[in-house]
Image (cartoon, rainbow, N blue to C red):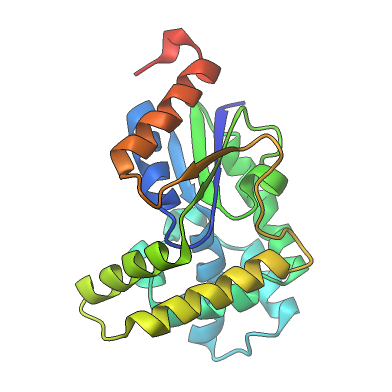
Length: 214
């Protein structure tokens, strides 16, 4: 069984950037679990299927190949909105969580980021991080990403979308967004990626063992 690092947090908190940095540093596998939900939503959109068809969504989730996740395609705003609807479906979550747990067991280790990694997917992970930031900071980050990609939007629209997604994630009955009791909190509101990474690295090194330090 590999060494798992569980990273949770709301959208645009910096958890994905941090997760990729950790995976690259330690030679671990990385999975952005949000992309798995986006892939299910994208398949439904491509098929013209209703986003509230839980049976069809669960079938897509059960057959999903994580090797085919394309961030450049799945990062589209409309897919993100659809994914937040699909993600509340218990049958979809059950299918994807099973696959995510198998991924987390890969050798020599795996870094998974999402919204229920430390609480549901990897409750026994030796390192759990909850990465957060203020809504305003997160909205500015997401707005900059959207503009950099050449897409038109407004800060107010982005902030409103983030607040709605936060509400859906935190209030859903199945696997709501919340830090696990033993998660280490990293507030990146005024912390750059280097500072966040160094804080995380100290925790990982302590748990992973001196012989595996990078």
